[in-house]
Picture 1 (cartoon, rainbow, N blue to C red):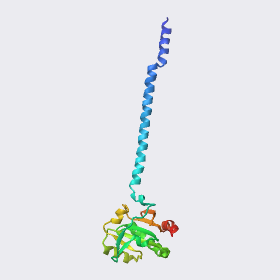
Picture 2: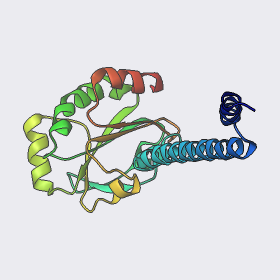
Picture 3: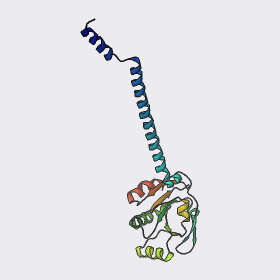
Picture 4: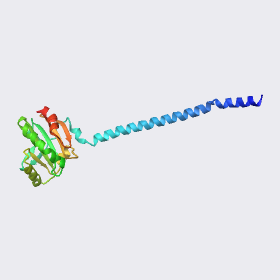
Length: 199
């Protein structure tokens, strides 16, 4: 056998992958594919967990569609006022404070909407969060607001409704079910859209 033929035969054997080498690379490819699939699954599960956490971090949503939790608070006049006192009406419960700029910004719209629709069985219950009665009374008198104002001095209603930020508004239908929850300032157009159909 000539040297040229021997070299060609050796080169030919080198070009053809041996079975062991083939399975070696096949196993590596399979392992990489499994790792990529595993990482993808973990990332997907992480996203699902994050979505659930976001939902859980806004616990007010658990009340939507359910009966509004009952409560009784003192009014600015020192009289006990209950949510049950307004059974059969559309009730807007607004959690607020005088130190809260968005709360103060929405108050004129709330008061105007209340004045326009109170004869239709609509009431705003402005539930102040943990402020002195004198502070609240002075603010209401200065601005001429006419809706009922209640004092949640120990944050009992805020905790019962799982409120974590102000303002937060709950719109309750005539049957006592929470139909809408608004976190943040509410506008006149939103009031028309949310409350209007319930009147």
